[in-house]
Amino acid sequence: MINFVTDIGQCKKLWEQFSPLERPWDEWELMYAFHDEVRYRFNFMTHESSGLIDGLVPLVEDTKDGSFELFGGCYADSRILWIKLEDFQECFDQLPENTAFLDLRGSWINSVLEIYPSLEANFVEQDQQYFLIPAEFGFDFTNHIHGFSPKHEKGFLRDIRKVRELNHQLIWNDADETELFIELSLKNFGEESDYYKEEGKQEVRRVVRELQKLGLLRTLTILIDGVKQATSLSSLYKNNWVSLYAGSNNDYKNLGKLLNVETIQEGCRLKVDEINFMTGMTWKAAWHMKQNPCRTMRKPAKVVKDDCKVAPGNQTQS
Image (tube, rainbow, N blue to C red; front, side, top):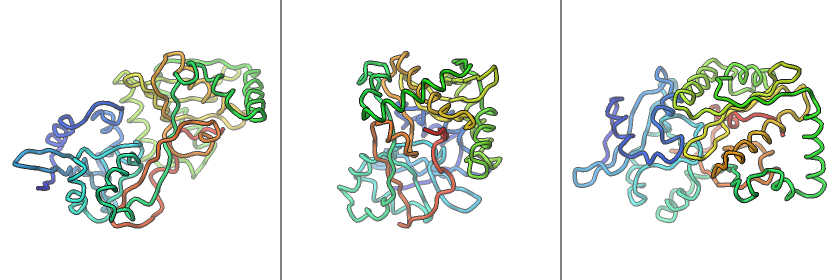
């Protein structure tokens, strides 16, 4: 049996019942920060068997256009639905038309399609989540760079050396550098920035404040000649690092490259299990990052332009 729950208190209890609390995206408080409470309306879907709730699809409605998506929006990557595989078809049939779940975990979707191959057309859009396992290169990103082609390695190290020659300072803390990030994103990308519109700005402000409140925020700020010119805002959750937002002043060549290298090296110093750079942007593949496939689900099956995520907030240049 399928039911829908619209009361926020009940939705939170259901979330806490089913969330595995393995990744930042499993935390209610953080996902609520991604949630625009004015624009989105709760419509959580539950699956019941023998009178007991045994599955949850945390669905919300976008009142602006009548579409449906997962609670917390389209930023979080590699999510799965908290339902049994054998119940997927029943739940899918009851999803409203105009539903889209972006960047679901590819391996989980593959398992779904093994049971329900007729749904293949609803999952045609694919992307890659990029990540690093610091233990694989001895917790020193320099060792990973040695795996590049000789020409790539030489050029990469030269670029980093030149930007290090600037009068720069690295500051690691848990500061909220949201406004600096937004300023740099708008400077570099203008109207193409994910944060050009006010709702995008408000979302990142909410998210970073919540990360700070939860004690999960790791911030790197790079100063050049005493002026802040780059920042990365990351989450450290249960020894897994997620690089969420990063921006640098593109007037300084390769500053974005240094920002990402230092972010990775901090994860190495802390001996984290994984550094997740999320989806999108070709420089991540060029850096030989590992990849996890992600697939987008749409009902009905069609390809449309996504306006909610051009790429993760890490928009620095490679």
